[in-house]
Image (tube, rainbow, N blue to C red; front, top):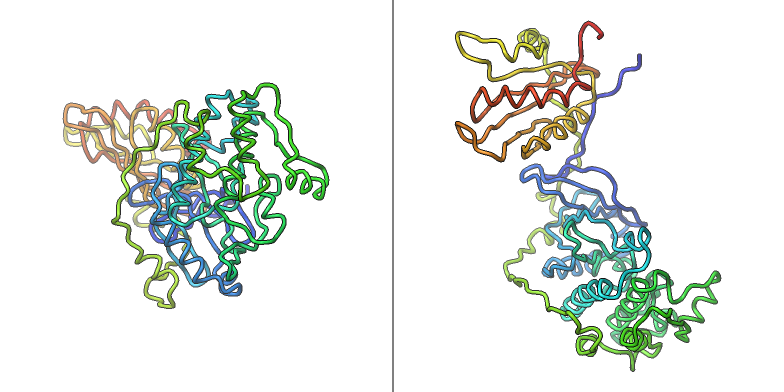
Length: 437
């Protein structure tokens, strides 16, 4: 039988890194959890050497500082910034509803009212950021996310194109970036363009896709695609209302000078149907000290990526705990008292044990707080002595053997036993039976 190496987890500061959510040329995004609060976040990890080589440090710092000040319900929020010797870590709001365009992939085009509702949120986000001098320049399906409530969240605002941005003395952008099907004609012509106008064009393409279920400009050859975009050569399907056609036509105007602006979109009759401006607090209490610290040369504030594994248990501790290997011991009485703790052995990797415990506890109405290889389970109902609370910890005895300890730290002991009878059925797969059964 092969022996598995002990499970490890990567920590950066107070965050435990998980699966990769996305990856690009200069950066990758990972799921992470704040081990102090239990909050889920996403962390964009940027290669510091690449930034230095491209001489983009000051520009990236400026963009991040600006974006950290932007707090809008339809824009992914930046919480904080950290740095190691080799990497920049941007801690972002995590949303778990997938991409908006997944809905189209699954169900086809959206009904007009639903498409309009998402378009309202998209325009609100773009308008707010433009008012603060930030253009996206790469609005596309991958950057439109949904949270668990179905609220649209625009990601990578101000960051997606920062590595290739070039602004010349005329104040116009001169880099053809973005996804070809969604970029404005002036971007393709490489004669300098206003980022706000190109964002509006992309919003028009997105609205068309939401309502039609396919792209307005789509050709097998890149030159054919560019030709259609630059002449705004597209047709409407019959399902589009006259109001939506009129608005999209004004947005997909190849001339950026005559193209409709966001203030004009907000006054459009089709757009105004059901529109409610977002209500949110615009706090001024944002601290940018972490951004300064991440980009200066001081070693004082640097974080490190470190691997963690369960606490090892020595032979003496193992011997002292061997009586607890049997789950039956939970219900023995000692000096007239029912035991308040139990432990068992497992040959399952530690991270899988933790996942099994969490999966078994949540359906029983317990909130889970994980820190390294310790976990606190807290019931959401009051019992005879308040809320039942259970602490668990995984100890490493050998690379392929762990001991799991569970003990009551709050609430009634008899309620703990009742809870465990149900809870333990979900752990059968991870409990090691020493007789091999």
